[in-house]
Image (cartoon, rainbow, N blue to C red; front, side):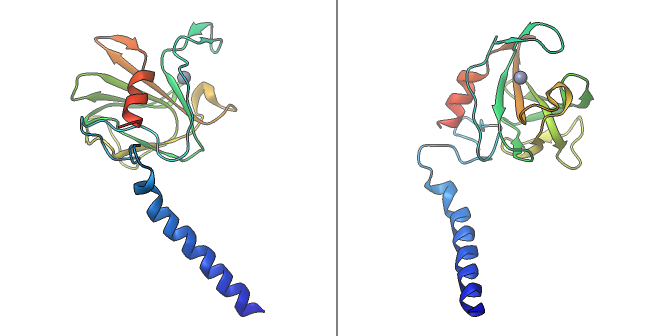
Length: 174
Ligand SMILES: [Zn+2]
């Protein structure tokens, strides 16, 4: 009896091991998390996630404002990737954003990541970063505390926030 249970456990473990290996390449037509597309961009959240076009959705915390980014909901500790080659400009802990990263892309867009659980070990301003490199992990730090864990992803072009949703959609589909 014990031997049968042991063998079943072994088969189960092997199946999980195998599926982890096979899953990524089998998802046809979708970017493999952490791998940049032909244009060098990479979807910023690995694994299971969901998001919608919540640009300019009304928000009330800390005060009324229009949402200036896209919230990508994912489990705590889901890896967060640099979406493009660039330089880390900021790794800070702020009241609103919690653990935040500012990344200046080589495309000269500014990428803002907020509510992280943790930064990647050793990540510091000045670091040159490659698209697809892990820079942190999904959490709910800052004013997201107590709410669902998610990455707030913002993009600034020429000093102005723009809607990241169409870009996220295109990165994910390429
Ligand atoms: Zn947000």
